[in-house]
Length: 71
Image (cartoon, helix red, strand yellow):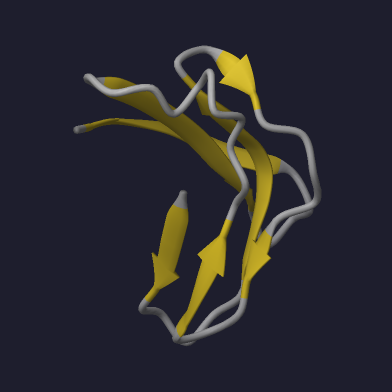
C-alpha cells in the first residue's frame, strides 16, 4: 500500500487497518514524500478494500479516524 503525503508536515500514524485487520508497525510519512506500507497477500486480494487510519495530533493523541474505500 502506498501513502502520499503532500503536506509540509510529518504524518505519524497511530493506527492503520485494511479490511478491519490492523497493520502493525510504526508508520510515519515525511513531508512531501511517499511511504510504502507492506500488506499481507491475503489482505491485498482483488476487490474492494476498506482502509482506516488515524494520525497522532499535535497533543500526542490519536486524532480523528478516517475511512476510505479503495479499488
